[in-house]
Length: 564
Image (cartoon, rainbow, N blue to C red; front, side, top):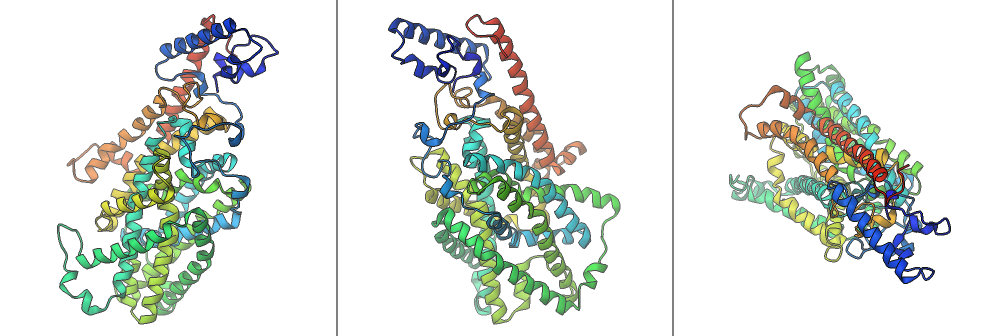
């Protein structure tokens, strides 16, 4: 597509010129000399504007026209394959109930339970923990639904959507950052599944020398071996693709709800009700609570900030916008309900065992019994599969496919994701509640917040939900999303601008810096909010200023028509 400011209105009888001057050049109705003259003028005008505008190539990067169907044009083979093509009507089979089941499968998992237990472990009362989780997910639901819209409207995945804002080649940056976080989460979920296998082992094996902690490894050889076994079993499921994921989520949801209910009933009976939970007050002063609340709110938002970014990978299969909105609207309810389960059971452990056990794997080990152990293995494995494969495999695999469609398939990308999950050493991330919440969850939100802000600002404020399908799959310099060599420098600048303020607080948290200004601490505790809004605003501001500049150039250039 050619920018509106470069459209040559030679005559009303040639309307196609404004959309595709390349096709006009080959028109049999024009003499050769006029064709050559037009070509020269067009190239000069393009280079004139490019040289005058080093940050953005043309106004085409800001405005786009309604896109044709994917089959109506030839996509660049380096930008597409079967996994990156828009979904066909036949593939859009996700109903609102199936999307809701997807979220049930995602929510009902050990990390969600662990995060809820961590809030009690850090001193919150039960109602404070639930309120924090629900508030965070209500906030997150807004960008979740907004980002899901282009997936349903155009049938495109997250890597393809990112081309609109970051550029045809620049899209690799946000997708690979998202993939990096997904790989980390994949390792965490897989480690939790390995812990479930460890529970099944006889006591004689668990007390052997293989269970001795190795400082260099960060865990025991036996626990690491269980982690690898679960990793291998999980990898076998990855090969089933999106259809397999949909079936897994659909049929696992009722099973997970049933097993969760059994755990709640057990805790209720053993503890003699939930009166103890309801009577537990906060261990924090008012000042301590608020200093904990905001980083906890950020951590809970960050918990699903990953999926909020790549939700088009799923909503592209939705039957309609209504289905994707209603299907996702239950997230705060699901998270609130499962948080209640986690907090209720965690608080009950103080009555039953005399101490708070926030880790559900440790709790299942304390309960004991052959039947309980096997149910625990089954439940934890199923919960891990439904969460890990959907949330932490799809996005990294698609990012790698987008990086090199000719070399990567979904399966190859998924296996590579699993390998990186090992490299993250998740057993170190889960060493304590504080490191899990503050270092991992809050830290990575600084990466995802600005990406989400830029993509939403681009789609709604700049393009007004109108994308050119053709230009999303072309490397033509005249494409709407080619920008400067395939990179949108405004998006890059906004991304850096959103991340930088969080860096000092992060370095202080991981121990690189001994101390930083209190302002940076506050910024770090609210990393997602600061990075999301600052990056989104700067991106919108830069493109708005560029729009005014291009209008001014168009009015001054005699080769170009007056700007509208």
